[in-house]
Length: 312
Image (cartoon, rainbow, N blue to C red; front, side):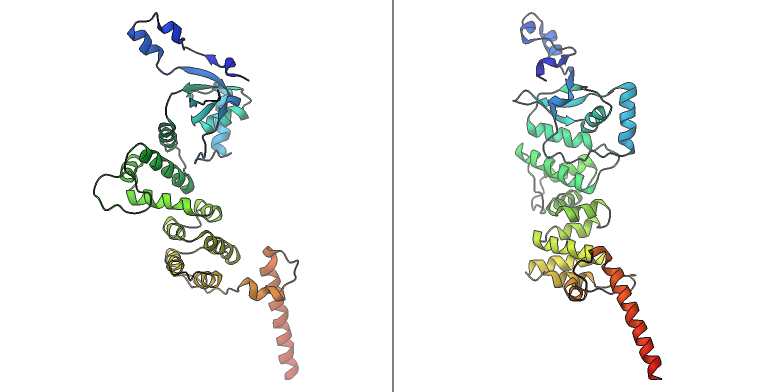
């Protein structure tokens, strides 16, 4: 479908402006609402916010079916004749699920950096925002501010007292500049660990410390977390970072740190996978390892009990 099928709901042509007074030209250049085909609208590149298929989406789809889109989405034109979504990804998805082919859209002329800042700001009003969404949104927003000539420092505390972009963003979103820095650090986590942060299994402070580990070290940690069914505390994450900085963080060190007893933690026994592997069937699924070991211990206990009885 070409842009010729875009329905203009109020825009006059540039030729018409020749016969307008100043007020008419100003009114004509104000934002106008169009009815755009959904297939002409592309998602914002690297959009940090997820479109979740949850109860809120179900309610939004029903609302669209009954009343249509109340608030137009915001898009910017692309050079290929298509449009880029700036604000309204959820509304677009709801229209698709409702079976609509077009959506009300406010077409704006702005730079990519201006679009990034508008995209981030408009989505910060969501009821639920995941840590990963904040992380990548804050990073995109700060980088856009930096390109526009405002000072920014994404990961370290500046020495100067001049207001930084991180401070400015913090004021806008109601966070301290240190909290903004912490969220941006999360963008250095591998997906497996970042998912655990989103799920609430790893808290923000330890996650920040883990973000300083190399990718290989993070992958080893993610594997250990899976085996041990446990996540590191802040103190354990700090210890891992220190070992990493000294070039001493390997699989055995990670396991040793993860096996340390946490405050108020019940005693727990842990075994490295390489230690158990020679005694396990090669085709045994990983999630059945614990059950297999417990049965083996049960049989061994019975063997010892019979041996004691025979010795009497």
